[in-house]
Length: 202
Image (cartoon, rainbow, N blue to C red; front, side, top):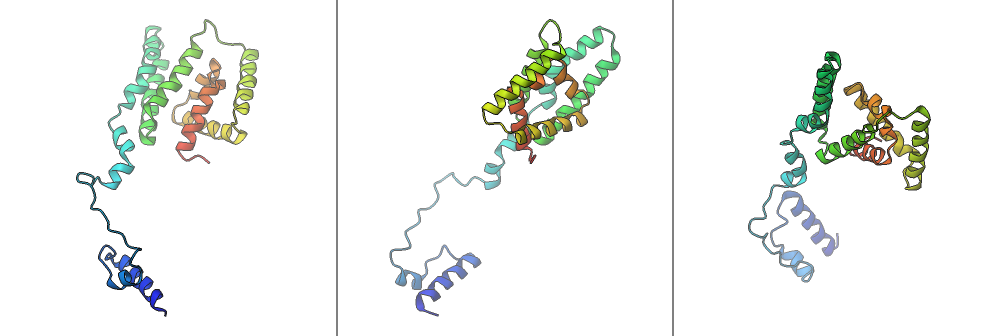
């Protein structure tokens, strides 16, 4: 084996056994300009790698997801109770708990939750529910806007699968999106696509 190859081989072995930080006389003689002095790490910069990689997850452990979801659904629950609709009130409480746990387990960004609920709430603020024709027109215009902005059918498919899975977690999600046409809102579709991809939907 040529001398230069022996030096390279020895350096590789040193790296494997953890001695690559120590000076190597042979390597220094063969490659005097290749090894530069390594400055010591700055004081106070010895952060644990795991804490850096997962700092967002760690921060979200302190998020009160039930409050984030309940803040949007509690009013509907109270309205149902005032109307004497105990069954609907109970269903809304269960939906709050189920969605809260799903978002917590998945580490969903609370800001994304608020944005989605805001879109749904604004859609429901109209004096009367949209007609089937209006919902269909909203679907066509929404899809046209998404397509023009580069959203693909595959992307929309991911969003639909994600929403279908949320429906399994909390029955009524799809009906809530369809009732006032919120499900056709391009902003909500993009948000669903983003969350689906973040969760690993492919």
